[in-house]
Image (cartoon, rainbow, N blue to C red; front, side, top):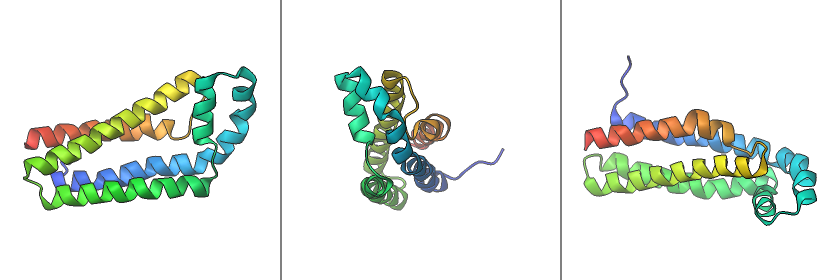
Length: 142
């Protein structure tokens, strides 16, 4: 089995997470149009809040994601530069925890709305397993 070196695994995380962001960007506009009537008809507070979060065009959503990408890239760069450092490990592990919480939110939003939400598939199939893999590698390496 091919074994990734730790710094390669950390850098690859940026690509894995961006694939997730691409799913969100591609799906967000069509999803908002398709689900608006279902959400509005039910008139439930939490469902409306979730829908309002996702009710943006792809351009606006991509602008949000630039901030996430830059933050993630800086944290990743710092971790790779200080690979053996405990503080950089804690920083990166904190970021991984944030990503796992983000993925849990995707699942919860889907359960509340009883419909797909943008980013769900890559959150479950790609990002969560890779986040857990990176977490395990960092813990083993520490």
